[in-house]
Amino acid sequence: MKTYLKLLSLVLMLMLLSCGAEHRLENRAQKSAPGQLGAPAGEAELPSILQKLDELAELERTGTWLQGMALTESSLRENAGDYAGAVTAAYKELARAYGMGSIQKSDLDRGLLNVLAVQGEEIVTKTANAIIAFSNGRWDEAAAGLKPIFNELDEPDGFGRWMILVCALEKNPHDRQAAAAYRSIRARYAQFPEYWYRGARAFSGAIAAEFAENCINSSPQGPFAQESRKILASYTGLRIEDGVSLLTKREIESIISQSVNSNNPQILDSLLPLIGLPDNPYTVYAVGALRSLSNVPAFRDYFNRQASFARGRLAERLIFIGRS
Image 1 (cartoon, helix red, strand yellow):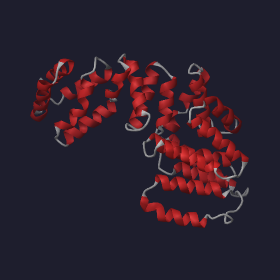
Image 2 (cartoon, one colour; image 1 turned 120 degrees about the vertical axis):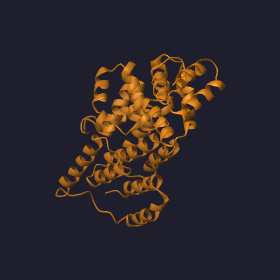
Image 3 (cartoon, one colour; image 1 turned 90 degrees about the horizontal axis):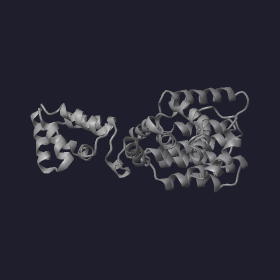
Image 4 (cartoon, helix red, strand yellow; image 1 turned 45 degrees about the horizontal axis):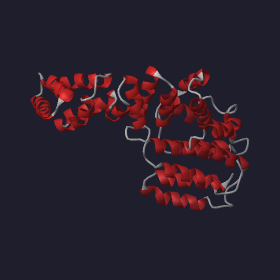
C-alpha cells in the first residue's frame, strides 16, 4: 500500500470537510506516516473489499450521494491494490465537490497535482496525467490515457468509463453508441452535476433540455448551471443571452413555495426577469403558477404594484397575473 495515496485522501478530506474535523484528520495523518502502512490486502480480505465496493456502487445507483463516499471508495481500492481506481475515486470526490460549487477549479487541479508530486507507482502517474488532461478538456490525450486502464476492466457505469464516454462525446456528439451508453448509466450519476452537463452538451432537442434541467436542479449555483441555462435558451428558441434569466420548473416552484410559506411576496422578485422573456415553456409555467396566487390580497397587491413600475411584456404579464 502506498502512503502517498492515503495522504492524498487525507488532504482531500481536509479540503472538503468542515474545520471542526481537521483535528481528527490530522491525527489520522500522523498514524499514516511513511513506513507504517503495509502491503495491499491479501486474498482473504479481497472478497470483503469487493463486496463493500459493490455496496457503494449500488448506493450511488439509487441516486444517493454522501460527502466522502468516493474517498471511502478510494481507500478500499487502494487496499485492494487498485491504485488507478483509487486515484480516480479521489478525483470523483473532487469533481463532485467542484460541480456543487463547494471548491474552485484551482482546488481540483491542486488535488491532482498532489499525486504527481510524489514518485511512486507508474500506474498512478499515468492515471493522474490522464485525469488532468480530462479535467482541462484535452479529450484525445485523456482518452488515450484512460482507455488502456478502464475500457475493459471497469464497471460499465464506473467513473473511469464515464470519463471515456465524455471524451468520445466531446470529440463526436453524433457517436450513437457512446450516446446510448452514456444515457444508460444515468442512475448512478443523478447527484453528479457534470454528468448532466456533459450530456446536455452532447445531445440535442428535448434530451439536451432534460439533461440541462437536471444539471441546474442538482446545483443551481454550481459552475455548470449558467452554461446549462444557455442550452435551455437555445432549445426554447430564445437568445443565448436570455439564458441567464431562465429558471427550471423546480426552481420556480421552490421560489413560490418560499414566498407563500413566509407570506413574503417580495421573494418573487427573482422571477420577474423570467416573466419578462419572450414566450417559452418556463415563462408560461411561471405565469400559470403565479396566477394561482392572485386571490391572496397581499400577492395581488404585489403583482399590481410591480405592474405599475414595469414596461412592455413584463407589465402585460403582471397585469394578467394580478387579475383575481
